[in-house]
Image (cartoon, rainbow, N blue to C red):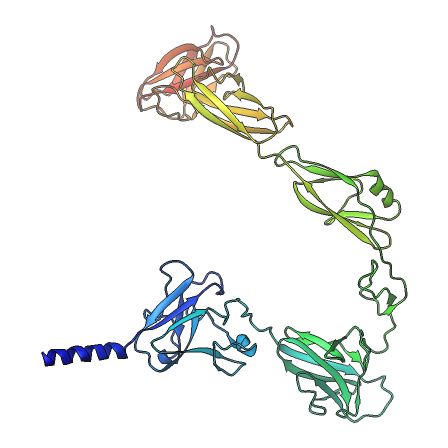
Length: 504
């Protein structure tokens, strides 16, 4: 017994050493369309997904889980998807003061940490579950350029100072390789907003701007040039202490972006700014009469009167001079006055539901032209008028139909139409098949020739019916027969249907 007890204790000890470490991750913040998620870390050489570290979501609640055995001590880890097609980036969270990824240099990596044998409950790509783990903006190489040709004083070096180099003074010297007084310096910058200015001989002389100058921003009380870096950029040449190039004549115009006649190209405000509302918009609309038809908008007299004063009314790229046809939908009509002031209004062009006719076979033709069918109409605009036609285009009565193909046409109150077709079957005939052949002569006065492209394999019945479905004559075609001559001399003038049927 003692030996057995010792063995059991040893087994319990082994189980305790190999305790499971449980990883749970909520994938709410993960990229859409991922196929698999796994946990990885230095304990497996930052492995990709394998059977033992791939996570599953058996209850479909969006939380994926896996238990990993034989982990010891403090476990460093992170989550990734689709074989490292994407992985967590928690650097921004840690920079913002989070604590879920303490293994970090705050710039290139940030990994999670937990004790082996415990349970982790995490959110993919974020510390707090708010899905705020946005990738950093792309950076690039920016070429800074300044024209010193209009600077009247003496200087030794031209320097670039900014938030990206700690306003270091003389550390970033610009060069003029071709002697044209334009000094340049390329700088690799991270994405985001940077501040900068040009200085001479370190900080001996520096640019000074006024609050509101178009190429500057005021940040923390300091007015400097600013730039949003989103990739490689070659900045235009600017004059020392000016937002524009040297020797450029000012462009007069309205420089107030809130004005009706704001001119983005203007560099000097000439006092011409105009503020106010656009022309009055009064209109009426007409819905489309049919589902796929055109509606319209019409300007009323008040709006029309402003056109003579220079107002222009538009919907997208179309000008509304009084009347404009439009497909059903929502639109914005914009009125712009001669002074540049604009107003707008929303309008909707409606349309009825699609007109649809459905045909139902009520009873088969017994062979006496007594088949029945009915039409069901939806959509469109009531009232409806339904007309049935047979294969020859003659009008038919849906309560007295012979075997064959029929088409019903519905017309609604707005004149919109829809069609549907139905094959009236004959009791005892399983299938209608179109036979290839010819009838001649047409029109016929005495003998009508019926020639089939290929002979039938068995004896077939031949029925001739008038447009009312009445049986006029009945005969047979024998196996291998291709030509049948019918005596039509006694037939009344009209349209007839020839039906050939066999037992196959």
